[in-house]
Each structure stands twice: as structure tokens, then as C-alpha cells.
Length: 343
Image (cartoon, rainbow, N blue to C red; front, top):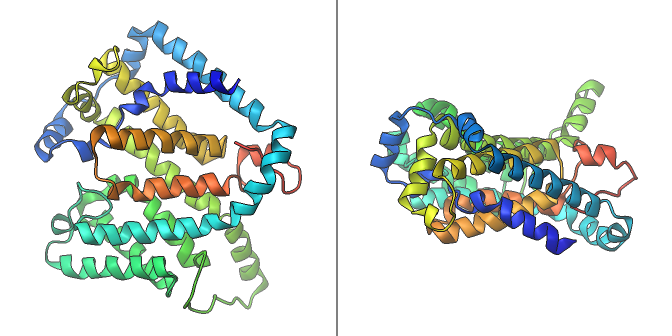
């Protein structure tokens, strides 16, 4: 059964293997030209490849139900649950290490979150101040020394980048904002030197903050999912020429004998589904494993810089380790005390 599932996953993931963060693998002039091109009608592509599209859709649905069935097996649950429940608390530590390291990498490489956003273009005369801010924010969070302060600085830099001309494009990096906000509001997974936690005198305020804290994992997960969905919409639907150019530039049809537009369509659908699965909390661990596997393969294939992907890799590992919270579909459906689905 597992071999069958992995085989199906491999077939379905062909478009994702050749997927990439297009703004990392194309030159600035190629990106500029592609942004001026008309959007690609991916829905017309689906209609013109109806048999392939329906076959892939059927296989995808089959994989989802097979994974769900295995995930809910009581025998497997009894074996695996003690392990997944034991490592669950370390998810917050992984998230903290992830964003701290990513912020320091941004400062070191002189670009905000990704190679396409050089600090000199975003902040012109304030580059040195922002660079120092990124180092301080990353250091505070990574080493657990006033992590709330570091998170506040990171949030401020993120907001400034939105108003520096990038606007809605910064949704691609909403994960930074989400993880920074969680640490700022609720503290880090580890804190060696920290401010006192905020105290509320009113019952309503205490209740509100307590309820909000229960949703911190959902907040981080939602921001991560939103960033993945927007990045796919941006590069494969709104500016689909970016993805098509990547397919043609790297001669990907030599490895995968499909129409280039169908490869773009497949990558778009899979990336959107990954984001949606994270958002609603469905097959979280399997989706995280799937995402990490093919992100790694993409990095190797395209030879991309690793540092912009630290936030993606670390957050996916965080979701893999933490698994389900109270605001995930499968946890709500699988109400059995502390128990939760395997995948």
C-alpha cells in the first residue's frame, strides 16, 4: 500500500519537482520582461488537456484518501502517537530558530527575505540602519535574548517594506510577519533573557488573550499558507510567463514530456493545494513531508540559493513536528482527547 501511494505521489509531483521560486532563478531583465506579458489562461490549458487533467485529478483524490485511511489506522496510531506527542512541544523552538536564522541571513546577504528584494532598492539611504535592525532582530530571536524585542523589530521592518513600494507582493513573505507576531505576543519557545509577560487586570482582557494564545499555531500556519498561495498565484497565474520562462529556460520538457503550459498548470494546482491543506489543517504532516521533499529536489535541480528558503524549510519542519492544533479540520473530526491523526 505504501509503495503504491509513493508511486502515485511521485507521478503527481512531476510538475512540482520542476517548480521553483521563479524570481530566484530568472535574471532581473527576464523578470522585468515577463511581468509585462499578458497573463496565461491556465483554465484554457486544462480544457485543452482534458484527459491528462482528469487523470491527474483522479490520482490526486486517490492519494488523499489513501493517506487519510493510513493516518487514521488505530494500530499505526498506537505505535506513532507517543513519539509525535513527545516532540510536539519542540515545534516552537524550531520556529524560533527558523525566523532568527532567516533574518540574520537577510542582513548578511543584503536582501530582505529574498534575492529579488535588495535592501539598497527598498530602503536606499537607510540600508545600514535596516541591516543592523535585521541582525539585532535575528540575534535576539535566535539566542532567546529579549525575543519579543527582536520580533517587534522584524515586524516593523516588514511593515516598512510593504510601504516602500512592494505593497501586496510582500504577501509572499507573510510567514515572517506571522512568526514574528506570534513571538511578540506570546514569547518564544525558549527565552534566556526576556521581558515580563504582559499582565491584564480585567477578566475580559485575560480571557481574550488566553483565547488568542490558543490560536497562535493557527496564526502562524495561516500566514505560511497565505504566503505559499500568493506566491503561486503571482508567478503562475497573474504573471504566468515567469513560470513558463523557467520551464523553457531550463529545458524541462526534455526531462518531462509534457506541454510546458501543462507543467505550469500542474505546479500551480499542487502549490495551491499545499497552501490550502496547511490553511485548513488537513493531512498536515504528509503535506509538510511532501513539500520538504520536493522543495529539496527543486533546490538541487535549479541550484538556487538556500538562504531565502530557510523560512520555508524551517516552517514546514515546524508544522511536521507540531502536527495538529484545535483549529484543524482533522483534529476537530478526530476528537479523542490528546490523540491526533498520524499524517
